Image 1: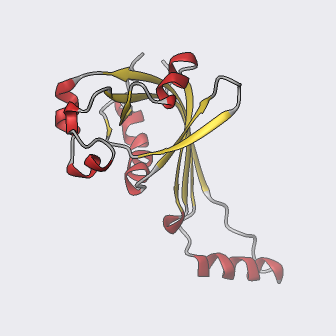
Image 2 (image 1 turned 120 degrees about the vertical axis):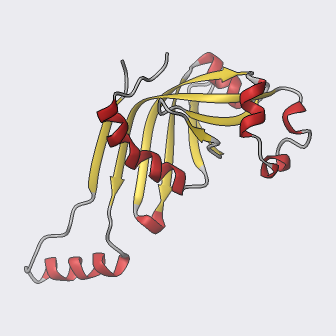
Length: 170
């Protein structure tokens, strides 16, 4: 399944894509064979034009074994410095597209995959986002403390975080 963002959705999704790009590491959660949840840190390599996320991994990893059994995953992003938090439900797919791997490859990945795109079992993990939620509070910690103090003395209420939800299922 491929997300096909309409132009209006693409504009709205832009804020979420920017927030994802700010974070270096995402946590992908899968369902284990025993039915438990397992989260793993992963680095996003690309957000494609349809809003799909791409990652490098190994096809023989426990992550991919879990995904082959239950392809529904959750992915979270946290950027505390910017007070931005994202949670998304996605369907995960495996791709062995060598052209795309070469396009996305960067030397940092050699820490995990020392033979580069020639690493045995190297694969691309593609997440087809289904639902995305984002909480964003533009305030600094000082402003939040001041809001809290003002709320205590009755001058104002505490500012609420901005919340967006996108349903990308077609």
